[in-house]
Amino acid sequence: MKFLLPALVAVVLVSCASAPFELVDEALGRAHYQESAETLEKNRRKLYGKDTILYYLDKGMLTHYAGLYEESSGLLEAGDRAIEEAYTKSVLQAAGTYLLNDTVQDYSGEDYEDIYTNSFNALNYYHRGNLEEALVEIRRMNNKIRNLADKYGVLMSELQRKAMDESLPIPPNAQAPSAFNDSALARYLGMLFYRGNGHADDARIDGDYLRLAFANSPALYPHPLPSSLEEELDVPPGMARFNFLAFAGLSPVKRANTIRLPISQDGYIKISLPELVYRPSAVERIEVVFDDGQRVSLELLENIQAVAGETFKAREGIIYLRSILRASAKGIGSAVFGSMAEDSEGGNSAIYGLLGLGAQIFAEVSEKADLRISRYFPSRAYVGGISLSPGHYSFDVMCYGPSGKTVASFRYEDVPVLEHRLNLTEVICLK
Image (cartoon, rainbow, N blue to C red; front, side, top):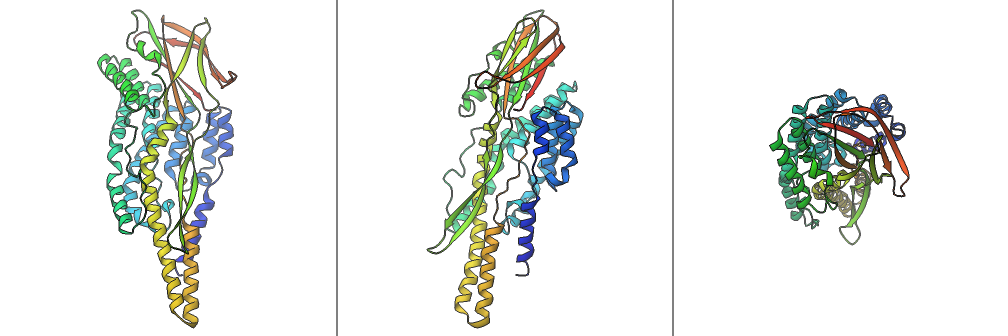
């Protein structure tokens, strides 16, 4: 009982530490991204506590949307480093998760957060006029994707062995291979950045890998290849290529799924698992309308939300096994005290009974899902392109909903489109 009360208090404090994001989201809904970032900063301690990775990612994305590219780079790079450090540290912290729950570990980021941090930092560098550093970020993103398959193998094997030793159920898809093995968005950006740097051969290679990503992962890329890809590396002489990259919607959040599994005729164990909740987007179609009447329909390139779900699957088996091992250990403690109460008499029986009840309460209250996740990555990426005579162009970007109603529109005036360089306009429509 000496350690039980402080542990219970810690669980309650953790559960009360979360705070709503309504003020940040309200400014975001009005496309006032700098106001969102400033509001987040004012409420940093209340919103994040010690979860610095989430702070870096959320503010890094909001400052990117606000066009504060240097500040965004600093935040996303800090988040990238912190994710790597936290993942290494989580191996040492794993024992603590057997006592309380997964929230006692430092948050080490979801895999999709780790991956897409590099793509948005690459865009930060593009907007800052540094294509070489943009390409470094894309190569880092590609390396992370390649390493995903081996990232959790050893830990999963260890947890499966422990679960089998204790005759606990193992989910049938615990080691199902991920369908995500390449990112069309990373390859698209690589193709554009290489082309902008004059590296035609490297641009062609990334274009080929982009097509392979679609061919090898039809579950993640059920939509057609964007038709504009055919023209990206074949710009007519004397013309300039004008590209558009639009981000719509918001990435998933998490909710708890509580399960009670019978362990005997009279008892059960409780586990609480995080599951992703996909946030719907009002945007169904995006079109660029030039003042001279030309139009470019942007097409879906990557469903970032689907990638988030697919990469989360790789960890679901680990979370399940760790939770069931932890819950089983808590259940055994309660059963031991109950058995001792039955075998004892008088005061000892009452003490053991209270300890058993305390262990049951501890198991029920302390078992909670880790619902930490960033909030401000987009859910989908759309692309398009057009070859134009070099010059300055004004245009509107129109975002339409399912009924054809305009959800949002953005005006661009006198944008330079130059020959032999990358002309990329990034559009943000998070509705």
